[in-house]
Structures are given as C-alpha cells and as structure tokens.
Image (cartoon, rainbow, N blue to C red; front, side, top):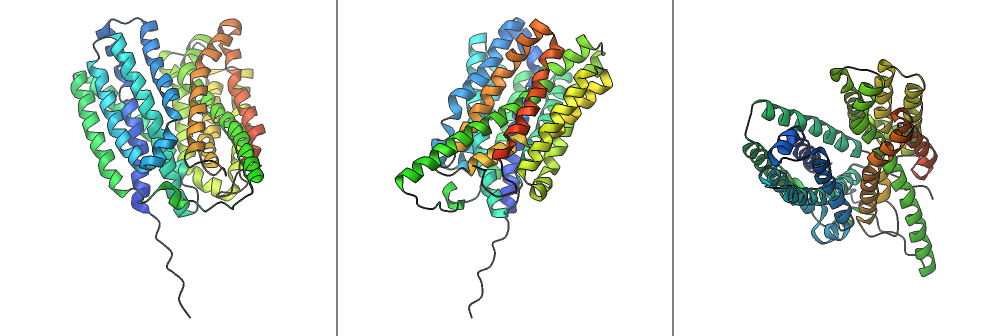
Length: 401
C-alpha cells in the first residue's frame, strides 16, 4: 500500500522574511518623524504648510492602493513587497534633500503611494504563509510592525539628539534597511500567489454574479471594521496628548503616555493574538475587542481623570489589536474576487478612514469640546461589535454571508 505524501514543513524562512518586511516598513517611516521639527525649520515652513505637506502621504496612498492588486498579480506579492521597500527607503531618504515645500510634498506623495503598495503586498504574502501553516500568524506580523515603529522613532530620536546630519542619517538608514529587505526577499514563497489558494467551485453565471455581489457587500462591512480600527489608533496618535494636557491638566511628560499606553497594549495584543484567534475565532475576539474599546473609553470619558484616561487608552489598544489583521484576512478569503482585490480595497478604505478621522474629531472638538470628539472612539467600538458578525467563528474559515 503506497505511503501518504509527506506533509511539507512550515515555511519558517518565508515567515521570517514577511516579519522582517513589516518591521522594516515601520522603521523607515517612523525614523523620519523625530526629525520633522528640523525639516520644518530648514525649509522655513509654517505649521499649516508642514501639515499640508504631510497630508500628501495619505493622498498618495489613496491614489495607489487600488493598483496594488493588478501589480501583485503581475509581479507577485513577495517581489512587490521586497522591491517596494527599496523604493520606499529611497523616497524616505529623499526627504532630507527636498529644497522646497513643493518638492517635499511631492516626495511624501510618492512615500504614501509606495507604502500603500508595500502594505497590501506584505499582507498578501503573509497570508500566503499563513495558509501554509493552517493557523493564524498574521497578528504577529502586525505586532512586528508596531515594534518597528517604536524602534524607528527611537533611532530617529537618537540621531537627532546626537546631531547627525539629516542626509547622512536618512541615507544611511535607507541603504541599510533596503539591503535588509532585499536579502530577506530571497526567502519569499515561490510561484504565483494563486498557487496557495484552494480552487473555488464552478458556479453558473447567475450564481457567480450573486457570489460576487455578496462578496462586495461583505467587503464594504470589512472596510467599515478596518476604518473603525484606525479611528481608535488615530485617537491615540493625534488627540490623546492634547486631551490629557488641555482638558485634564496633565504635564508634558504625562500627556505623551496616552499614546504609549495604547501602542503598548496593542503591540502585546498583536504579538499574542494569534493563539487567541485560533482558540476562539475572529468573530468572538473582534466582538470582545469592540466591547473593550467602547466600555474602556466610555468609562474614561464619563469619569474624566488622568489615570482613568490612560487606562481607557490602554484598554482600547488591547481591544483593537487584532481588528485590522482580521479585516485583511477575511477580505483575502472572499470568493469571486481576483487575488489581491479584497486586500487592496480594504487598504483603500482603511486609509480613507485614516484621512477622515483627524478632521472629523477636530470639527466635533471645536463645536463641543475634545471630550465629546473622542466619543468617536466609543462609536468605533460599538460599530466593531455590530459588524463583527461578518467574520468567521473559527480561524481559517470564510467570512459569514
């Protein structure tokens, strides 16, 4: 009797490569942020001018995100991720030599566009690897992105503190991490992205159209989930320090701890979230996470205090930790869509939410106070609880629908 074919070993090298890409992606961006005051001073920019230039990055991302699917189908997700990171490193290095506001804005437009392509590609390749493991590993990749963001910020702060010239700093970091991305790319999975997908059952024309329509509807709900996730993340990044400082009277050092609290628990949640998702399923984990966001921030805003607010942001960070990876994974499994199409649409909707979030909270804050504006975080938690039904009850299945 013939023996069964051997089970292929998990692609550990490819998993390490994808984790490296997530880390490098975050380092390259965060590494520049501590040097923005220097860039602003060198170009003689006002706050409004700098803010407008920085807004070019999300605009570039929105313009490019929908092109990621056809590019991945043509070149492969691994090549797009690895070589895209080289281009991203070059673009981030070019920030140092921008001679004017217009050139800086153009460079940041390119940064946003390339970052969107890399983001979709590294998630697509990560999901290829995840299918080989037959269990959840995507959350850990996003956790490594969070670690990379902290590492990049520390690297940029150290370079600024030591007075390293901006060109040498960004150029050196760019060359080093571009090389890291290329070397790690040697371990990418071979073949086309379609090779790791189970063939879909053949359906009649009317049935195929119905399946695609259902997938598009589910995609819209998944985009809403992803946007809710970035609303929570942006609240910590854009508004936590201002709220703690101006509304609650915290000192400068304490005011920055809101973002630290949210990012720390979110990173821990992502690094440990895969086991939780495998045990309880994405649907249950996301519903509980949304409830944590709504209850944690709701209590902090209802009974305002500095310790309570820090705790609220920490609970919200834990609650939202697996939300964006869950939306990506579910979108990638939707039937009736070309490979990469679901991921690219989620990326576009996510970035649209990121672009919308700061002005929405700002408008509400100007009209009714920032405490009221931060109720959008509570609303995001409620939306998450209500929309989580489209996710799978167990890891590895398809979205409900």
